[in-house]
Image (cartoon, rainbow, N blue to C red; front, top):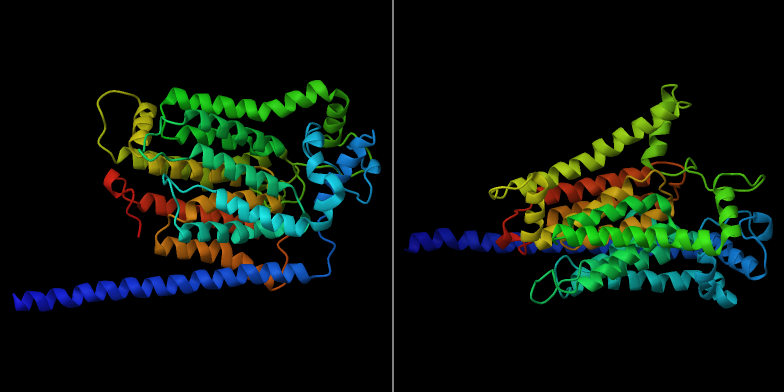
Length: 443
């Protein structure tokens, strides 16, 4: 017995020491990341740059509309050469935001508060309450991941509003009940789906994110209802703009299709770190840059090979690891698996949103803020090694590039960082035990 005790004693002590050591170095890494993120923001705040140009454009458009001018003609916007990209209905929606010129004059302080609010609103995966550590990690991700907030903070882009609304939508969609019954509170999930649809209407290219709602742990009929509600939420601002702002809607279409001469226009092929532009760059290298069919085919292949197919195969692999119930098609078995594993299903849902978002054909630098919002939901549940990798790749690496004075504008650094982060999250999902009793055991 004494020999056994001597054998077991050091093993237990060694495990405790290993856990203590892991917690220490992980805490140091989190602290270092936080210092870098705060240092980056402090450095940006002291630079002699006239920040907030997107906020000035948007509020100038609201003012022009209030004065009876067409805000889609840049000549009617005071103090800017950029065009207004949003649907006509947003001119009335944004009017309270721009009232009094407070946002334009103090957008950096306002955006800091909104980013904190965004991090506090984000839900946990299947939990009714979040620990202070989880909240801190989400806030760190919101402020530092992919330089998204840094770009929003500098430009004053209204993606900050999209991020806050996305956080509210996710909180409603992923809310957990004390009893664990996902069929309760369906009305709130309907509201979350509608809000998610409205958010995607701000930037039309991100509407495929709505399809991720299929992975929620609900019966198929209810999931299809949520997708339909989200699609209606996406279409509603377009319909309102078409019916009640007919003249401005025509101007909006003309601005998007470059039919208004001699002014800036928002283009799909505008310089941005997306897979589509990466495909065009690769085709340019081989002399096929002028062939749009080849370029779009390359983009589709890259999105499928790098993101979408690996995600789908990983989900099917996880669902297939469970004993197959008699009867039913593959889709029916997937539905059953999602319902049987609600916490894993919520994780899959957010991971699907991340995958669809990063695959979008137009992904401007400030759009990475909303991508960081999706990542912030997932980061708190990562085990130590995956969390360290996510902090290093998604926050530390781009932060070091930024604070060193190198610009990421016009390159694909942010896209590469986002894709690497996606694979960290995906590989961790593939490695997680899928047994129901193991869902809440995360080291």
